[in-house]
Image 1 (cartoon, one colour):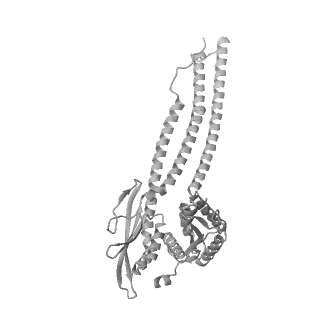
Image 2 (spheres, one colour):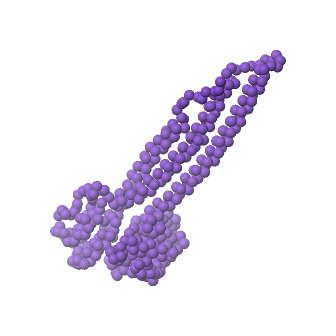
Image 3 (cartoon, helix red, strand yellow):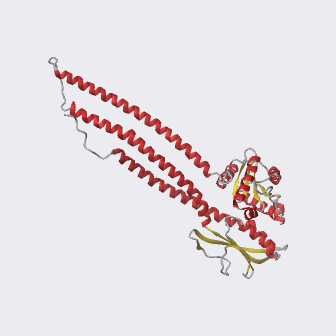
Length: 437
């Protein structure tokens, strides 16, 4: 009678796939949520610091414009502040609380500060109010009004959105790859061999190992043939174990190859997360890391920052469209990338602003480098619009200064370049000049 197939039992490979993949999905979802929460916290804190730093950058200019009743300068400063990504609106009031000028989205109440309100379901509106006080030559203080900066935590959410896209793409790729790996490895490399071994042992039980036999001499007869068959079966089992060991070795090598591929893909995704998609330059996240690395490795060798802003870039978008504007940014990015020195890091700081981090450079060397870049950009024909100009702000790190202070002084120098006619290089003010001012 031919052997009967074994009774149907739950497939172990399928259960393993469900259990492992379920655990992986739960862990991946939890880690993604934690990573997004951390990223949002960092972006929110950075937004708060950016808003607070505006007082140092724009406070003196606003105070001078209000004191002198110079509406044109005041409007120019407010227009420049409105271009900052962290700012959704700015309002200036005189000493009696009356509104003097306002740009962007500001609170309509007559008070100097706006209470938090929900905006578009994306974030919470918040504001920071700063007093304007004029100090004359005798040191006497004259309150001339106040100014309020309005921002929105939705900006931080927007900053985290790109990180979310990268995380989701990464998770989707790993999930799909792991699913096929689980199916191929567990079902075909574990399930099928186990099923074959189980069926083989079942056939041996029914056909040759129904009863254990021990021969104790007594001549030769038909039982010796049965023992020979049993020994042959044992030998076949040994070869089956050897084949299984070979399969396990192949599985280990395949797993190592897959791990190497996953590691390579992870490195590619990390590089993508640090690259600006429009220009191909390092993005702000990579520039922040480069600043921290340069600061840690400075050791007295010098560190300078050059901030570059495309002049009249809004006019390019208004006249030619955002596609041409993107092409202009890409052209300027290519010029900056070709001209960067050894060890420098050039990247897109935000909008139409670029930054060069120059480890080992002092103020004079950085200024010369910025001037050379300015001339080169002015002499280059950009796509669709021909030659354009850029303004530059340069600052060198002072002893004990943090990165935020260095960048803020470079931004202030850039603002002076814009205010003094554009297409020029301005350096940080010396301590003596700043005190005299």
